[in-house]
Image (tube, rainbow, N blue to C red; front, side, top):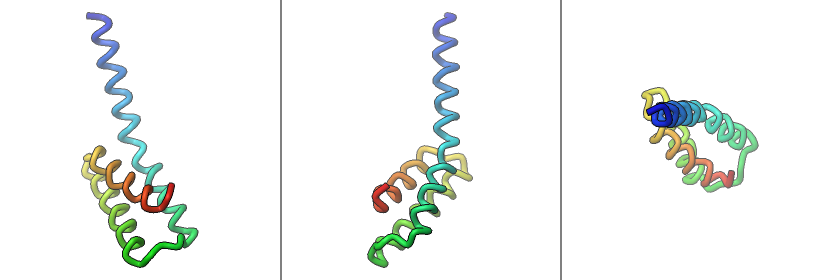
Length: 79
């Protein structure tokens, strides 16, 4: 029983830490965008949309969706 409680506590803590990583991901994307990366206009628009979608999902508490969108944006930026 004690081990189960510890495991659940650790899993919850990891989930919360992951959820709060969204702002760091957004900062990384913003920093890369500030360098004016050489992307096609369509790709740049897609990155900006994914970044906005990630922020909206984060604010709505949908951290998995946020991290997915932000991860796609980072991949498109090469980071």
